[in-house]
Image (cartoon, rainbow, N blue to C red; front, side):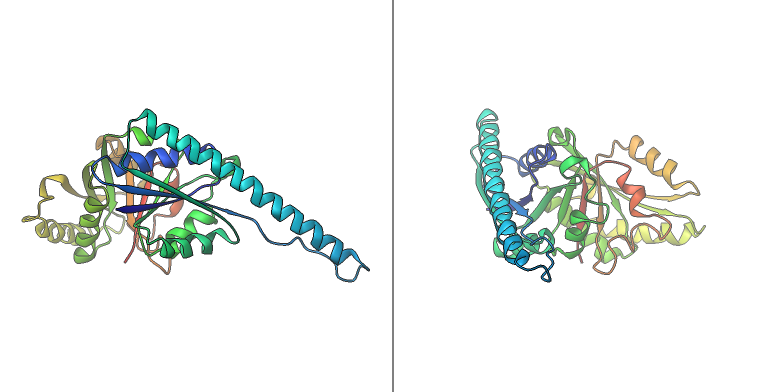
Length: 291
């Protein structure tokens, strides 16, 4: 049985996340959906110089934290009830639903829980409560950087309805590593019709060099069962946004994938001239793989 860990904040975005998870899990194997919420349990700053204010403030803070916990448990109960109703309507019986609520730092709580429950995949939203983009210097980016398992970040939308996933995979110019990661995509999304478009955008004018690297990678797939489900491209361009947009539109891309390096999540993605902002603006699900 596979285990998907779904960190949630109870915003509308959480609905998109769990529906996406159910869609890619499929119906052929048993899957555990583990929902987790981390609430803030940090005491508010107090001024110990004030006579009895420290004890009074501490008591108030503890009451607030307890209220956060109770509200989080209530919200989780409602979410789990909604998920089970959705599964009943969809007539899906191959899912096991579990959940937890803990106080603390979400970055560390999620990573610790991932190891504790032996999760195979983390699926989380790219936006949090109030539609704040949590990729921008917060939870999702840090999780993608710290996790040792694949992380899928899902934008708000109807991506859960996809019957076929066309992935634009960012070639890392290391044929053996890319070969293993592309194979891992097929295993990860085994219950979905999948086509992987391997692409390398380059801006230095070294087209021959990059085409040679792509050809070497392509050769590794000649005897692979995935040969007919993988395409290869190199694109020499001076207009990265237009080139990416055209590539995505032409190939009906609905997912982006890349290798998240520990030192810098986007350090080796495509080229140093492409940044995370170039990919966030695409507003597509993103699959972060790891070395």
